[in-house]
Length: 261
Image (cartoon, rainbow, N blue to C red; front, side):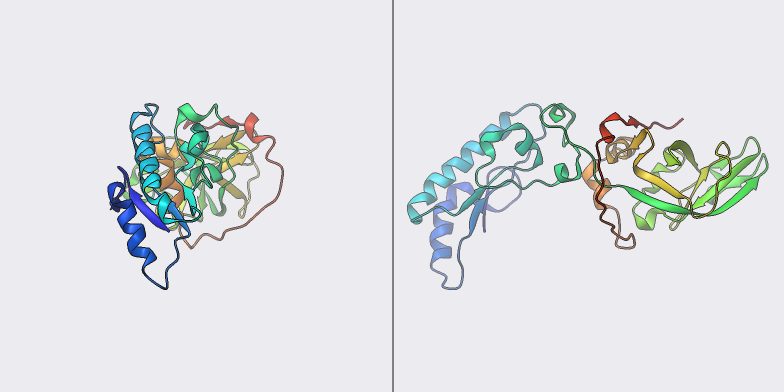
């Protein structure tokens, strides 16, 4: 696989494409299976740089074409380009974020109906009633102003839940949004379940995903922490088991996004 730099990562400059192909073809144990590059601004509403990079990629392909009896596979498009620029599809597309059902940028949301497919869930490990004035978790960043029922959930920042989200998010319990309270710790976090009756330990809590008519997405967390949804999705560690499920996602489009109460 040959990578040509055309304005994104540092690789072989596109002007040297032919020289690189000639060099590799002299190596007896290497075979060029594909030629590709990477787009730096495909998710930008302004396509100026994208078109420039595409032109450079086309120029590089024109350089190397005489070196092949048949061109190897060509690929350039990431998720944003795959959604917004069909002319960049070539022989394949490297779709990443869109596989998770998320859009690389809001302006691409009208291109194709995507449905979020990844959910993050954990179980309640402990329930406790507390009195007014009780501080919760490290630093007592949350202090109860009334009698409350608090649930401890067995997941924390060592699993990929950003500590910066402490006291800023809601989670879903039995289809109802409830606030996360106190500092998120390494292995657990606390939620206010005062208004949910008859709750039991081992109840499943949805941190990302849909429960009932509500949905929480990585985009929401990314906005709160000033980052991108890619970083949120890449943060979930090996400690979390991966479970593949097969059921209809037809109701996801009807779900309501959750904001912190």
